[in-house]
Length: 146
Image (cartoon, rainbow, N blue to C red; front, side, top):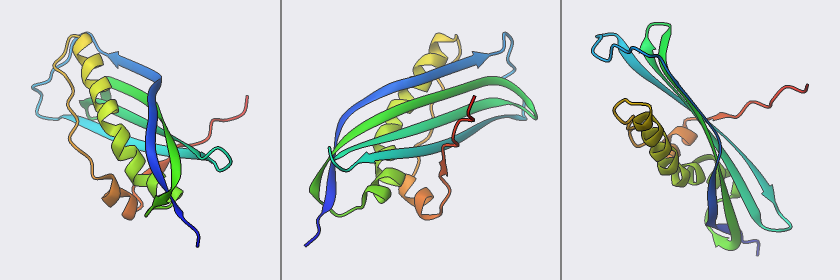
């Protein structure tokens, strides 16, 4: 009987962090809006039973096409796998793994925005299981070869 893996987090680390803000920002402008996008990818080493999930968070805030704040955060989660889970590696990598990692991304964005001299950017909770079921989580685009 084939067993489906169980996942235990080993570590989460910050791979890349970029934050930019304009000197003067009109937060009170009625058209000031936030935009958030999330992309994921994963790599599973079946021999070592190690799952590596990458989550990319893009955040921008501004008025129309003018960005006053922008952030790009990439975090990697390392998960150890065993043979007693109810989810496949692919299912876990698309929804559950990113959901476990999301609070770390949220905290980093809040912290760096505070250090930038603005109120902390507090992202709402995200239902990754629903987004994955609706196929709304994009895969991280591969980098072009140089």
